Each structure stands twice: as structure tokens, then as C-alpha cells.
Amino acid sequence: MPDFDPFVATAVAAADAARAVTTRHFRAALDVASKSDRSPVTVADFEAERCIKDIILGRHPRHSFIGEETGETGGETDGANAGTTDNGGDQWRWVVDPIDGTKSFATGNPTFGTLIALLHRGRPVIGVIDHPALDERWLGVAGRAATHNGAPCATADAARLADASLYATSLDIFAGPALAAFNRLSAACKFRVFGGDCYCYGLLARGFTDLVCEASLNAHDYMALIPVVEGAGGVITDWQGAPLTLHSSGGVLASANRDLHQAALAELNR
Image (cartoon, rainbow, N blue to C red):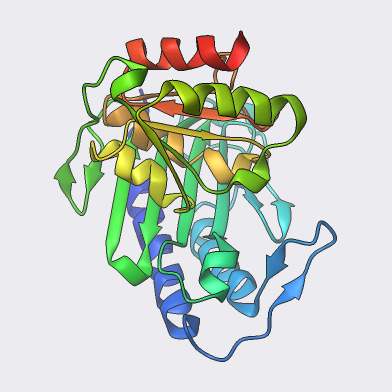
């Protein structure tokens, strides 16, 4: 397995830089624009992504970078360096959401976060979930226990849906059959809660909630979550139980443990 420590240092430095940007803009006078899909975007999104990108590509210029706001940049494939820790972009790809929860950010809600993931040969091996306004950070690294503010964290042990709490950022992200499936799952759970953006997954990794179910997500929304949830003992897949990839359909289910995950999948797909 490659030595991930240099890349962990890069991810942490990038999260620190983004935190400085977002805290400076948070709850300040800020214009909110709309993208083509009507989702909001601010100057803070672009500025934070630029800081993250500059640090990552400055340290690892042959890696590729996918940002929510600027798309994919660079990356080389160098067969002569295959197996090294800093070869081409086909081997190493960063996936970043500078502000996950721009609606929360723009309305003064502190649950927005920065998501930074590193993929090795398509598999997420490092994930950072950083919440600047709350001074909380989760770090997941393949083969290691996930941490919350530097301390190991672990998911809960509820194995029955009837004992489980369920999170989703908003009911608005579900429509048609997806909404019906989500309602089946939530009806089987103890209770459901809305709001939180990527903070929900951090709460799951800390053992405070049991399930997070969402739809209409893109790769930059979920790649960083995977090493954190798995490193805390949880399970995260698409709604069919398949591993999440850059091209997954948008449905994400995260669970505190495998038994609960299988029960939740059965509700979503019956």
C-alpha cells in the first residue's frame, strides 16, 4: 500500500487554507448567484476552491483535480513511475467541494463544510470533512481508524431500523420513486431529521445518528465521506448496495453498521 502520509498532510493543509477563506466570508455581506441548475454559489466557493487547488497541485503537479466549481484539471499518466506515490493523474485524483451546503453558508447556518477526497486508482483513500464555523474536522484514511478533531471515532451499534435515527439534508432532494423509497425507509425508522449537509455523515461517524440517506448527489458531494464513514466502522454505498464511484447515479446510503445497512437497502428496494 502506498504511503499516504504526504497526501494526508496536503489534505489537511488544503482544509486549513479553505477554512481561513470560508470563516472570513461567513455571515458577512455576500452576493449569492445562481448556477445553471439554480443552485447557489458565492465568491467564497470559488476562492476556497482556488486555495485548495493551488496547494494540492503545487505539491502534486501530476495529480488530477476535480472541483465542484472549476471541473477537472490536469493530471498525467507516467507509466515509468507506476507504483510510486506521486505518479500520474490516472492513479491519483483529488475530488473537492469547497463549500458543501452553500445554502446553509449563505443563510448563516454553521453546518456547511469543506470536502476533500483523494482517490487512488478510482478508490477514495483519504477524506476530510471540515466544518470551519463549528471547529470540527473528520479525517478518514484507508486502513486507519477515522478521527474527529484528532481522536478516534466510531459509529453506533443499532442493528434494527426500529431503533435507528435517519438523516437527510432535505426532503426536496427526493422525487417520484426515490421519494417513495425514502418514505418507506423513514417509516421503518425510529425518527427522521432534516438538515445538516455533510455534517450528518460526521454525526454518523461519531455514533450520534444511525443512517443518512440522500439522492441527487454528485461525486464531489460523497467521495470525501467514504473513508470517514468506513474508517469509523460504517458502510456507505449507492441505493443498490454497490460501491460509490465517480459515476454513481446520485443515491447515497450511509449506515452505522452492515446489518443496519442491509435492512435499509431492503426498504429502499422493495
